Image (cartoon, rainbow, N blue to C red; front, side, top):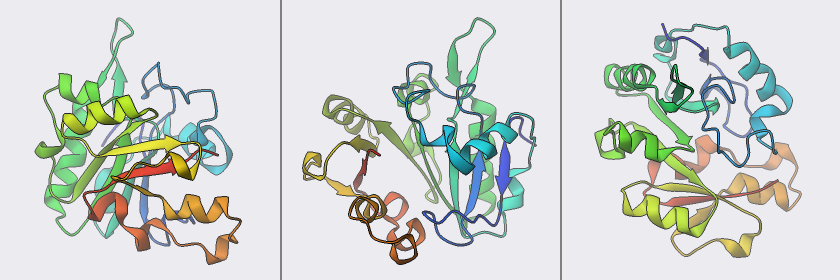
Length: 210
């Protein structure tokens, strides 16, 4: 059992794809205080995701509920951090160990997610190389300088960009975001389960800001 965690084995998120499991943690409580999107446009503070993340504050779900899934998007809301008694945000090692244990026990389950505080992982001496092969965590960032630093430290990155032209040669543009920007109807868009770029490639990802 993990505190402040909502688990949905059979998610209905159109962007992710049918049947993709999801987990949620509270926005703010588990996020870095300096995240530029916190209270300034974070998608997890809007719509249905906002409802799920609010519920996660009091939920205490078992990650093993995901054992029957093939795909899980970790932390649709929130991050991998916890707050210490003195107000610092550090990596929630208990939660990270629980997610690692899940993927080791269920080698068929592929999971992916993002963190806005890769430095907290490094401070805890946990790197992407320490994760099981079926668990992928990308470092979220907003500038080329951040991307360069994270890549140098062994992280694949997920960078938020304003326009398609801002993408660099070693980034792939999220096709769902692109189709949304181009006005493709939701029913005709692809999804994460089909794309697989975030969890089945070695590419850095670029997300269009909305």
